[in-house]
Amino acid sequence: MFRPEYIQELQAGLARDSVAFLPELILCVGIVLLLLLRLFRAFDRVHLGWVALGSSVAALAAAVGQWQGAYGFEPLEQPRDSLPLFSGLLVYDNFTIYLRVFLLVFTALIIWLTMLTGIPDREDSADFYCLLLGATVGMSLMASANHLLMVFIGVEMASLPSYALAGFLKGKRQSSEAALKYVVYGGGASGVMLYGISLLAGRYGTGYLPDLAVGFSKAGAHFDLILLMGMLFIMVGIAFKLAAVPFHFWCPDVFEGAAAEIAGFLSVASKGAALALLGRIVLVLAGISTGGTIDFGASLNVANNLVPSLAFFAALTATFGNIAAYLQTNLKRLLAYSTIAQAGYMMMGLAALTAEGMSAVLFYLIVYLFMNLGAFAIVAFLRNQTGSEDLSSFRGYVQRSPLLVVTMGFFMFSLVGVPPLAGFAAKFQIFQALFDAAEIYAKPAPALSNTMYALVVIGGLNTVISLVYYLKVLKVMVLEKPIEELEGQAAPAPRLSLGSSFFASALAAVVLFIGLDWNGLYICSDQAVDRFYKWPKVSAPPVSASVGAAQPKPRLTAPLPTKR
Image: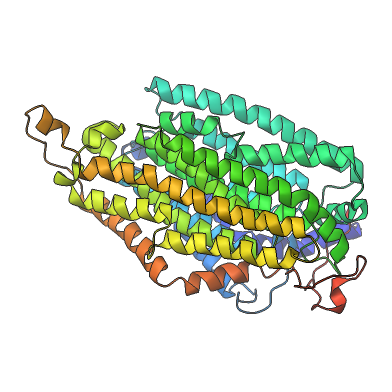
């Protein structure tokens, strides 16, 4: 039977692509299993969190195996070229594997947390974890997208389950209101993003990011309204997921209305996937990734357009988030604005538009996972003990549960960036990447160099501002008198389980350990961006000079398939 050549190519590569896509396939199997178990009445009396946790751990084991070179792939320490999957719609590289490990570690931890706090209950566990795993699959697609169509599909796959999760507390009116706001704002952002994708696809006749990079380089410094509008609309959709100012307005309301566990999931996983997607898009379109020889002059032209915009919104996001957080009295709402500010710090690393900047962001993401999840976990434990999430309800709480307050102190000081905790190492990486970028841009683009130095100053000032409201949380918990003492009542004994104590202590220990020895994580994050081209530190490069003459040519042994 005669088969077209491209059908034979698809069949030949299907097995390889499926193995490379193995972690996501395992999560899909877990979703199907949860849905099937839901059909049997016997499982209505069983909490299915163990099934979801097993699926996420199995997917994590597969991702770690890919990291170490299992399944026929080269280990991370060896040169690994980018591998296009499914006709180039996705890409398999070190960056993809790193983000998979990040998302799956976080998913396993958040499932463990929900089982400790009792949200969801046994009856709703199957539905809840199907949504959670489905959102994780979508976020993984965002991190590996190589085509504008997959960018949109990944964002929607991550967003739709998140809308339902935000309103999962069905008996709470505030939760339903938060979900409705999230859906309305998210639907508008998705529509704007899709319109931007259609503009770029119509302008260049393709949606493949490497092909779009060629079109961007040819555009050079010429003004192109369609190109500008298309990129702007796509960035709106990503900025919404990132909760970057001025597209942040949904974040505090949704976090306050949703359960603390869901707010923690959205604050870390959603931000991580959005930053990974934004980083891949801007670095690829700027011509700073593999794909043959790279025209330094063309890349510099794109940098002149992208860097000021990214830097402006990064500074605005960090500053607004820190200032707004100072006025909050609800602990979840305070952490929501803290999340916005932390996104601004990470956007500063992206604004450098260098592989080193992206590596610093990846380092920050791992640290952010533990310290921010730890903070939201403490909020969930406090909610279960007091029935409140208002900061005033935790006055003098150190007398009731010293362990919770001490671990909360670890997370708060780490979010500020106080040494020797991991938050200091993360911010150090970001500021170091900005300094290095300033040196790179010093001669060919002095304005960009000054922008990098300005970001360092703004980041430092924001760190000082953030210290005020993070310390306010600890001040209330440690120095102020308990409400029961003011009312002449006896404080109730805390009911913190052994599992909850271990969970909080383990996260705090990781935050301290990374702060004391961050070399291993630094090496891993640097290896994750080895696909991206590193700018040469030159004084005055020829405008049309190819980088390949002065630098090792980027590795690309698996070319993108011909599009039909």
